[in-house]
Image: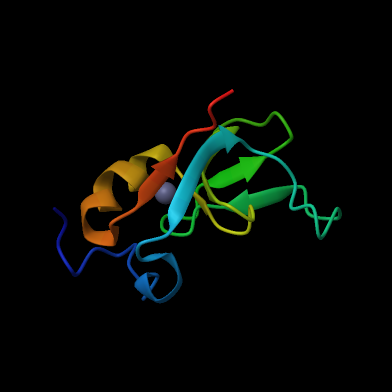
Length: 90
Ligand SMILES: [Zn+2]
């Protein structure tokens, strides 16, 4: 469990509480091909299709790819946010 004062928390429960997440390789948001990177919804770690130092290439995404969560924040907040993880069967 984490402290409620964690600097990464900014009311994300309004849109991320209880959602289903998918662990996947980062990909561009299909509805906006101009985006080539995204940030963790909590710590702002960067996800990108580019290969740069410190950039993440996989993480937990909402089903629509809109929100991304890095593995560290996933572990830190999964208990508070009641996430379900959908694992594709194939
Ligand atoms: Zn994070």
